[in-house]
Image 1 (spheres, rainbow, N blue to C red):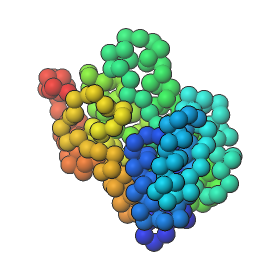
Image 2 (image 1 turned 120 degrees about the horizontal axis):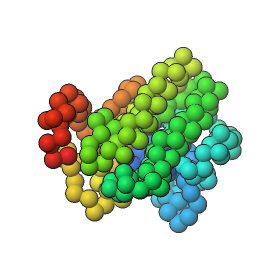
Image 3 (image 1 turned 180 degrees about the horizontal axis):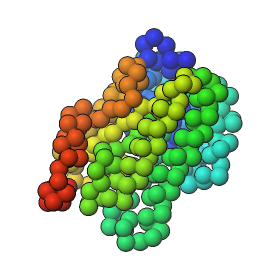
Image 4 (image 1 turned 180 degrees about the vertical axis):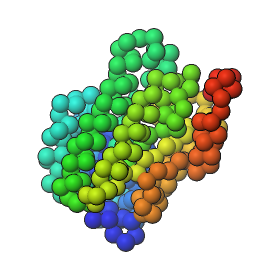
Length: 250
């Protein structure tokens, strides 16, 4: 269970090698010295390194095989997790090449399969676990890109829009069962995913996102933007006339 200070006993990271997921685990390790982390990701050197880094941070870290594209396996994904999941972080996703994504069928399919279909099937599995436990928080890492998809990355934005809508609805469905969903909408995050790209205004870091997530879970929030000023920015952008929006350098 999550204690009075907002610290979980067991944290599940889906896409556990992502910079943001690992930053969240490290942030929780600071307030929960006996933290157990189940790191769900594809086997390999990156996963091994992630487990080692969390162990060094004082966590009890174990690995779980997980592939976002293997949706057929998502129904039984959590069968091997024998302890209650206090906080689950849905952190996997692809950014992709924005031009390939709208001109090449396979590129578009992969983005949609990972960012939306995989997110939905794992969300259904997580929802079943929360209902069975009677408690638990699911943290869904969405993106401001889904709030109003832009010409520069509209396929990615559309997948995040769908993912965001699903987890927002899942939060409503789980309320009567003792569960909660936190939808996180970061702006540009300096990470491996965005390496080599020009930073957008209000760019942030995995550590800043992690701190915001931990505070939001503790405070019982259901939606946050990181940084917080991004909420006002996106509200303004959502209401711009299309003729004006398309002229912006976004």
